[in-house]
Image (cartoon, rainbow, N blue to C red):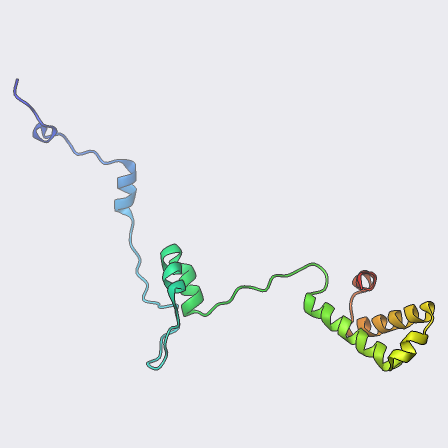
Length: 142
Protein backbone atom coordinates (compact mmCIF):
# COMPACT_ATOMS: atom_id res chain seq x y z
CA UNK A 1 0.00 0.00 0.00
CA UNK A 2 1.50 3.32 -1.01
CA UNK A 3 1.74 6.09 1.62
CA UNK A 4 -0.91 8.82 1.25
CA UNK A 5 -0.39 12.21 2.85
CA UNK A 6 -3.24 14.43 4.03
CA UNK A 7 -2.18 17.14 1.57
CA UNK A 8 -2.64 14.64 -1.29
CA UNK A 9 -6.32 14.14 -0.47
CA UNK A 10 -7.49 17.60 -1.61
CA UNK A 11 -9.74 18.04 1.40
CA UNK A 12 -11.54 21.29 2.05
CA UNK A 13 -9.60 23.50 4.43
CA UNK A 14 -11.48 23.90 7.70
CA UNK A 15 -11.14 27.04 9.74
CA UNK A 16 -11.77 27.08 13.45
CA UNK A 17 -14.10 29.67 14.91
CA UNK A 18 -11.11 31.35 16.60
CA UNK A 19 -9.41 31.77 13.22
CA UNK A 20 -12.63 33.18 11.72
CA UNK A 21 -12.87 35.79 14.48
CA UNK A 22 -9.19 36.66 14.22
CA UNK A 23 -9.36 37.07 10.42
CA UNK A 24 -12.49 39.24 10.59
CA UNK A 25 -11.05 41.82 12.95
CA UNK A 26 -10.23 45.26 11.65
CA UNK A 27 -7.05 46.84 12.89
CA UNK A 28 -7.15 50.41 14.02
CA UNK A 29 -4.06 52.57 13.96
CA UNK A 30 -3.63 55.65 16.09
CA UNK A 31 -1.27 58.44 15.16
CA UNK A 32 -1.18 59.82 18.70
CA UNK A 33 1.95 59.86 20.82
CA UNK A 34 0.73 60.20 24.42
CA UNK A 35 4.23 60.74 25.75
CA UNK A 36 5.66 64.24 25.94
CA UNK A 37 8.06 64.88 23.11
CA UNK A 38 11.74 65.02 23.93
CA UNK A 39 13.45 68.32 23.23
CA UNK A 40 16.87 68.31 21.55
CA UNK A 41 18.60 69.36 24.79
CA UNK A 42 16.68 66.96 27.02
CA UNK A 43 18.24 63.75 28.25
CA UNK A 44 16.43 60.83 29.74
CA UNK A 45 17.97 59.71 32.96
CA UNK A 46 18.04 56.05 33.66
CA UNK A 47 20.25 53.30 34.80
CA UNK A 48 19.99 49.60 35.23
CA UNK A 49 16.58 50.39 36.76
CA UNK A 50 15.30 51.48 33.34
CA UNK A 51 16.46 48.24 31.75
CA UNK A 52 15.03 46.23 34.63
CA UNK A 53 11.62 47.90 34.34
CA UNK A 54 11.62 47.57 30.55
CA UNK A 55 12.07 43.83 30.88
CA UNK A 56 9.54 43.44 33.72
CA UNK A 57 6.86 45.90 32.65
CA UNK A 58 7.40 48.34 29.76
CA UNK A 59 4.38 50.38 30.86
CA UNK A 60 5.85 50.96 34.33
CA UNK A 61 9.17 51.99 32.76
CA UNK A 62 7.31 54.43 30.50
CA UNK A 63 5.39 55.90 33.44
CA UNK A 64 8.43 56.28 35.66
CA UNK A 65 11.03 57.49 33.17
CA UNK A 66 9.13 59.25 30.37
CA UNK A 67 6.25 60.71 32.35
CA UNK A 68 8.29 61.19 35.55
CA UNK A 69 5.57 59.84 37.82
CA UNK A 70 6.25 59.27 41.48
CA UNK A 71 4.96 56.78 44.02
CA UNK A 72 1.62 57.97 45.40
CA UNK A 73 1.56 59.22 48.97
CA UNK A 74 0.33 56.49 51.28
CA UNK A 75 -2.56 57.68 53.39
CA UNK A 76 -2.79 56.70 57.02
CA UNK A 77 -5.82 56.76 59.28
CA UNK A 78 -5.95 59.76 61.57
CA UNK A 79 -3.38 62.52 61.44
CA UNK A 80 -0.31 62.19 59.27
CA UNK A 81 3.11 61.86 60.88
CA UNK A 82 4.01 65.32 59.60
CA UNK A 83 0.97 66.92 61.25
CA UNK A 84 1.56 64.97 64.46
CA UNK A 85 5.12 66.33 64.51
CA UNK A 86 3.79 69.85 63.96
CA UNK A 87 1.41 69.41 66.91
CA UNK A 88 4.15 68.14 69.23
CA UNK A 89 6.56 70.87 68.14
CA UNK A 90 3.91 73.54 68.65
CA UNK A 91 3.02 72.15 72.08
CA UNK A 92 6.67 72.11 73.17
CA UNK A 93 7.17 75.65 71.92
CA UNK A 94 4.08 76.87 73.75
CA UNK A 95 5.07 74.98 76.92
CA UNK A 96 8.57 76.49 77.07
CA UNK A 97 7.29 79.98 76.31
CA UNK A 98 5.18 79.67 79.46
CA UNK A 99 7.66 77.82 81.73
CA UNK A 100 10.81 79.56 80.41
CA UNK A 101 13.51 77.88 82.55
CA UNK A 102 14.45 74.51 84.00
CA UNK A 103 14.30 76.05 87.46
CA UNK A 104 10.65 77.02 86.87
CA UNK A 105 9.98 73.52 85.53
CA UNK A 106 11.44 71.87 88.64
CA UNK A 107 9.31 74.09 90.92
CA UNK A 108 6.03 73.00 89.30
CA UNK A 109 3.83 70.62 91.29
CA UNK A 110 2.76 67.47 89.38
CA UNK A 111 -0.78 68.83 88.91
CA UNK A 112 0.56 72.18 87.65
CA UNK A 113 2.91 70.38 85.27
CA UNK A 114 0.08 68.23 83.89
CA UNK A 115 -2.11 71.32 83.43
CA UNK A 116 0.68 73.18 81.60
CA UNK A 117 1.21 70.17 79.29
CA UNK A 118 -2.53 69.83 78.59
CA UNK A 119 -2.87 73.57 77.92
CA UNK A 120 0.03 73.45 75.48
CA UNK A 121 -1.39 70.42 73.68
CA UNK A 122 -4.80 72.08 73.38
CA UNK A 123 -3.18 75.25 72.08
CA UNK A 124 -1.29 73.30 69.41
CA UNK A 125 -4.21 71.06 68.45
CA UNK A 126 -6.55 74.02 67.98
CA UNK A 127 -4.20 75.47 65.35
CA UNK A 128 -4.94 72.51 63.02
CA UNK A 129 -8.72 72.91 63.28
CA UNK A 130 -9.46 69.19 63.59
CA UNK A 131 -12.95 67.67 63.68
CA UNK A 132 -14.08 67.20 67.32
CA UNK A 133 -13.86 63.39 67.23
CA UNK A 134 -10.31 63.45 65.84
CA UNK A 135 -9.37 66.22 68.27
CA UNK A 136 -10.30 64.04 71.27
CA UNK A 137 -8.48 60.99 69.91
CA UNK A 138 -5.28 62.88 69.16
CA UNK A 139 -5.33 64.58 72.54
CA UNK A 140 -5.51 61.16 74.22
CA UNK A 141 -2.69 59.77 72.04
CA UNK A 142 -0.38 62.69 72.75
